Picture (spheres, one colour):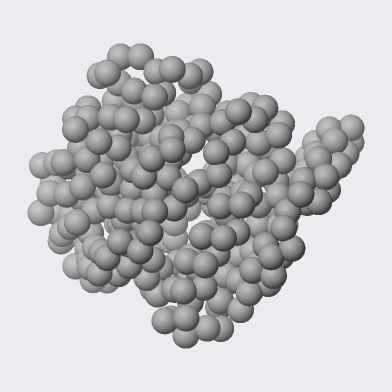
Length: 293
């Protein structure tokens, strides 16, 4: 792979003034310089758009009336020129060598591969809480990995490097629950476009947990919606393949510890918990459930 391949970064921005400068500076400071940054302001009512304009010489700014995450992503994707793409949260921070490491790793694998990594969890003030180690499924077959996805394996989209060509295929949908958009995209890519996922087992992102982020709200609804997405997707398969996947999911369930089921029930209480408690419950979920999948 040429080290000069362009990487496009899409940042959907909505009322993100508190963390936006830090996020953008982490992108400008990348050791891999052949990147384009596309920031889509989704009708912010704070100073987010003004902050973006301060960097107008370093990024492309798109602005629209408030229309949600899907609309902002779609607009950003329509302007992508790079072979590789990532969408990134304005709350989070990218380590300086992140893109260089991912592009170098991508040169070793087929182009229909999505790369993701471990990540560090930080609080609203940037304090490091812990490193999160994703489950390493690099040695699994595509079918075995798809079973994990169907069972609910999440991938932190902020860590990913995605072949831009995937955005030209059916995959990203406007969903009632915007938090599920990335899961839906990854699942469709795996099942219908024969995409392989590869973990880079080192932290490349600081992922910020705070009470105002979208993933904290209506978490019970989101978990139910993700289950609906799985069922909907399976119904699109022919009966033989659907049966094979359903059998694989049931067999995989048998290998999961009972404590995971208890923790998942606790996650359903998250939406009614106060913010100080929701941070702790979410961290518990990240640390215990996802790591064991």
